[in-house]
Length: 263
Image (cartoon, rainbow, N blue to C red):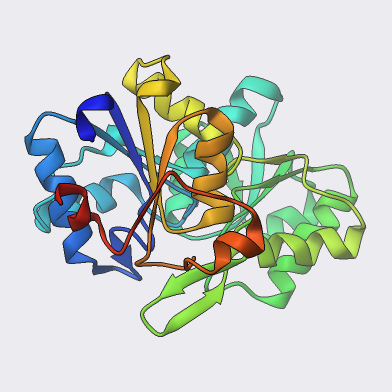
């Protein structure tokens, strides 16, 4: 089946890693595809990843992926802001990887006290496992004063070693509910913008030759279906087979894990 595809776009959380712990069957399957000459790009809604550190971790686990072959929702958010708005100062609700991408984009990252004293041009909200009530409130006030409201993604859930946890969308919705307004932009999946970033990296325009692999029907599979690519739901993360009827989102293939690609 893999002969039909020039590019494989794979998720990370729930596919390759579960809170940093490897999902070996899937890693070995993607490693084999790369060794067979397939182009693989990782596209993740987790903005907390540093692409350099994630690349090092995956290479240590035997999966040869370069930083430039990884697209995070943080990178997608930065590229959109640079293309769309005149942004200089950003208040960030997120983890190290998101802060790193924003700084690499040439923006000044404001502290909480700086954001209180002078309104930033944008507030970017991503997954933040150390977020506080005060930080969310500062972000909300900055947006109410006119800062752009950017979400890295709207994931409801995040798969950890101990079970499901709140996703970035829960933090975004706390601000949305308070202000009765939606974000100005959501960078991550299922928004096809993040895939356009990946396609540009691969210098590929033919969507019929793209295979999307993910563990969430409403995120990965929905996006792949909407962009006209073939999709695999791998049952090592969040979505289960019974969720297909609930969501109305149907993948082309369903695998227990990616070792079934070879069978």
